[in-house]
Amino acid sequence: MDKSAYPYHGGRLRWHSSLAKLTFWSFVFIGIIFIFFRFHSDPSRRSLRTSSWGGPAWEKKVQTSARIRSRNGFSVLVTGAAGFVGTHVSAALKRRGDGVLGLDNFNDYYDPTLKRARQELLERSGVFIVEGDINDAALLKKLFQVVPFTHVMHLAAQAGVRYAMQNPSSYVHSNVAGFVSLLEVCKEATSQPAIVWASSSSVYGLNTKVPFSEKDKTDQPASLYAATKKAGEEIAHTYNHIYGLSLTGLRFFTVYGPWGRPDMAYFFFTKDILNGKSIPIFEGENHGTVARDFTYIDDIVKGCLGALDTAQKSTGSGGKKKGPAQLRVFNLGNTSPVPVTNLVTILERILKVKAKRNVMKLPRNGDVQFTHANISLAHRELGYKPTTDLQAGLKKFVRWYLNYYSAAGKKADAR
Ligand SMILES: O=C(O)[C@H]1O[C@H](OP(=O)(O)OP(=O)(O)OC[C@H]2O[C@@H](n3ccc(=O)[nH]c3=O)[C@H](O)[C@@H]2O)[C@H](O)[C@@H](O)[C@@H]1O
Image (cartoon, rainbow, N blue to C red; front, top):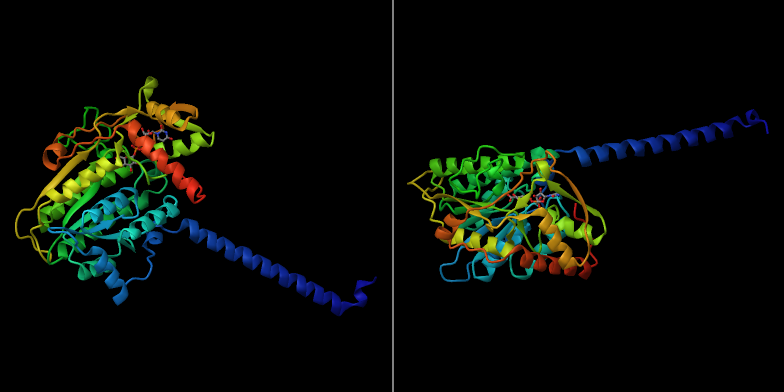
């Protein structure tokens, strides 16, 4: 057929096809822009996205959750309440009659489904978690207007040692800026709360003298994570000095257990062993042992409660210091380091599956070769005495893991 005999028809076809092309390329363009903003946006901004808050119904929920139900009980704001340690501490405080209000930004550093499941667990025991970021000063101020918190258990943080190389700004955002934002609001309160917060064993960095003691220097952090926790300790000193805030930092040593963090080795080793995947096991120079002072969550919770119970009142009010206030730092470890290879052997025994071990040199990714806590100070001052060894604690973890991931058909979306 001679196409030129039908010029109009041919033009229409051409017009249709160019319209289709235009539409197609517009979608591609919009898609690229969407992907760009989804994956390249500043993580700090991403986590600042908060759900709506405020209004009489919301305030009532906040007040009810924070209401003290025991004699001499506390009213505690728990930041990072949907996190691993935050969930356990919130539940324990609630159980003994303290008022507890949670705050969490539910970011996607690891599977947020797990955080939502922890939230459900807490909600069933009467703990409400406000969805918001510690950098949101307006939200924090509002919370302090609604509830005169006696204590803040500050556990919100960007955790994980190795991830700091991938997303450094998230550490500065949460562990430095977020901490300052929280302290700013606390110091302004008419009745300043006492603050207990999570530092880390990683502040001991490249130290070689063991066990690590609070008296040791902490000026050789091996990761940005450790550096931000160390910065937190210095910031705590400043706010204590200028504003009279009572501050207690707890140096946690590799905390593990049920409802744990999927980015941690014991957790994803379990997942990978069960899936027949090989696991990378780090070793030091000349096949040197890499070991951790793994500490069971229930022991850590007891340490946290001990710290809250012995925290003295802040002395300032409305941003003005009235006198010297308490400033403390404690190691909370198990004080019996276990080589990572032994951790794997224990998991093999519990899971009844042989691991595919891929032993490799400790990468330069922020990891240190060993940790070991001296806990005599915490024992003396907080009555802290860990009672769970790694074998017993991992058994409890595996029981929870199998139950959690089989029960709801949930996928162990560990990393
Ligand atoms: O105690 C602490 O301060 C820190 O404890 C953990 O950090 P880490 O001890 O490095 O815990 P994991 O990431 O679970 O690693 C445990 C051990 O397994 C080793 N590992 C890790 C990953 C891997 O692929 N292979 C491997 O052998 C690490 O070198 C380390 O010795 C937490 O992730 C930090 O948030 C916390 O602050």
